[in-house]
Image 1: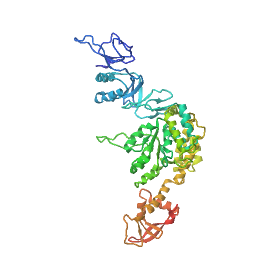
Image 2: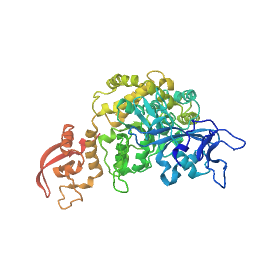
Image 3: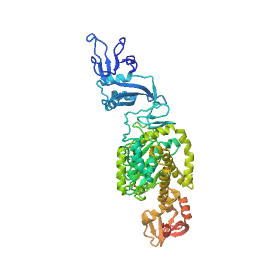
Image 4: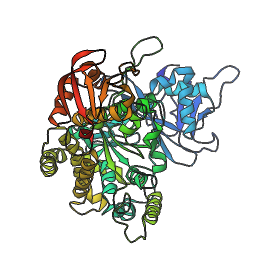
Amino acid sequence: MSTDNVVALSAHKDKPPVEKLPPFYWVHREYDRERGEAGVYFYRAPTEKNPNPAPVCISDVIEVTAETRDNDNESWGKLLSWCDRDGMPKKWAMPATSLYANGGAEAISILVNGGLRIWDEKAFIRYLKGQSHQSRLTCVTRCGWFKPAVYVTPVRTFNPIDKDMVVYQVNARVKPEPFCGTLDTWRDEVAALCVGNSRLVLAVSTAFLSPMLTMLGVDGFCFHYVGASSSGKSRSMTVAASVLSDPKEYIRSWRATDNGLEGIAARHNDGLLCLDEIAQVDASKAGEIAYMLPNGKGKQRSTKNGTAKEIQQWCLALLSNGEIDLKSHADSVRKSTYAGQEMRVINIPADNCEYACFEELHGEANGALFADRLDRAVRDNHGTAFNAWLDNLTINYEAIKNGWREFKAIFLADVAEEPTGQIGRVAEKFAIAAYAGELSSEITGWSAGTATKAAKVCFAAWVERRGGTESHEDNEIVERIRQTIVRDGARFQDVNKPDEIPTARVGFIKDDEYIIPVEGWKVIFAGLDAKRAASVLQAKEITKSDRRYLPGLGRVRCYIIHRDSLED
C-alpha cells in the first residue's frame, strides 16, 4: 500500500472525504453508532464478493505529532501521542527502527504496555510506517545538556525559548520520576529540617549542583559519607534524593559490576547518582570504579563481531556512603589507591557531629527521633524541587555561568592556601556545592549563607580526617612505608641470623633500625616514584641514606628507618 493512502491525522475531520478511494487508513476520534468506537480504522478496497466492506478498527487512537532526527540527520523516528484506557495522555519518541525489528514487535510491546489497545498488529505496523508529519524535532539518546540553556529529560525539555524542540528518543518509554506533595511542602517539611545540619545541607546542595558541572566546566566527583552504622549517613542521601524523586526508587547500590555501573552512570548524565554502601562493591575493583564514575568515561568494549562499541560517557555528581572509605576497602585486598581516585572520592565524616551526622535536631529529643521525622517528611514530600531548579538554570543560564568565577575565588580564598593544588581542586567541589545551595535558596527557603557555611564546615572536616593539607602522594609514601613495616615485618631479615632468609625479603632489621637496600626500596614503592619517596621521607626525617654491610649482599647503599621515626 502506498503512503498516499495513509492520511495525516490532522488533515481531515472525523469522517473521510467521499472522494477518498480505499484502501486507506483513517482515524476516527469520536464514537459513531453505526461504525463503533473511536480508533484507527482500515478501509478495505471493495471486491466482487464484498462490494461495500465495513471499516475495521485496528487500534485505539494514536497520532504522529512530529518526525524526529538527530543533528546529523540520522536516527529518524516519530513522536507518538495517545491516551491509555484511563484517559491518561502518553508520548513516546519512537525510533523508526522499532517498526522493522521482528515485524515491529518491539514497538507494539512498548505501546501496549503504555495502555494502547491493538487488534491487528500487521495492519497497525503498516499504518505507522506510512504516517508522516511536516513538523521536525531533534532527538537525543542521552539526558542532560543538549546545548546551552537546553536540558533534556526523558519526559520534558527545559528550554526558555522552545520546550518542544528536542525530545529524548530510545527503544523504551521512560516513566517520569515519581513525586509526592508540592514544592512548598517539600520546602517546609524537608529542606527546613536541613538548616543547622551541615551534612544534610551539603547533600541537598549536591543534588542541585549536579546539572551545573557541565555548565560551569567542573569535573565530576563524589562526596562519600563515612560513618558507623545508624550514624545518619543514609538519611543524608535520602534527603538529597528527595530533590529529584522518590528515594526508595532513585537510590542505587554499589553492588553491581563495572559494566552495570557504566550504564547506570550514563542514564544519570548531568544529574545526581546516589550509590549506597561502598562495601558492597568488589574491593579489587573499587579504586578503578571510583575513578571511572567521576571521570565520566567507560571502558572500550567490542561487539560480537569484534568492532568497537561506542564508549559510554557522562558527567555527574555522586553521593555515596559506607562504614568504610575507598582506601580502606581497597586495602582489604591489598589494592592501592592513588591521588586521582581520592581527589574524586571525597570523604565526609558522618559520625562526628554532636548527634552523629546531625548538629540540630529541630526540637526532637534525640538523633533517632529526628531521623524518623526526616523519613516521614521525605516519604510524603519528594520529586518536586528538581524541575523547578532546571527551569531556573535554563532561564538564568548565562547569569549563573558568569557569577561562578567570582564566587569560587572568594570561597577558595577563605578555605584553601593553595587553590591550584590538590587541596584547591577538592575545595572547588565544595565551592560549587555552596554556589548551587545559595542559588537554590528560593526553592529550599534557606537564608543567605546557609549553604556556604555548611560547605566550609564539611571541607574542614575532610581536611581534618585526611590528616592535613599535604599532598596525597606524600601521605601515601609515609603510609606505604609504615604499613610495610607493621604489616609485612616478616619480610625483614635479622642481620644477626644470616641463614634465616624470609620469603620475599625487602630489607633487614638490626635492633630498632630497618635497613632497606635500594632493590627492596623499589619493591616497597612499586607504583610510586621510589626516588621521590626517599626525598619525601628524608625531608620528614623519617629515613636517611647510608652504605651498610648486609648478609649476602656485601656493602650496599641503603635507606635506614628508626622505629621511633614512624610514630604518629
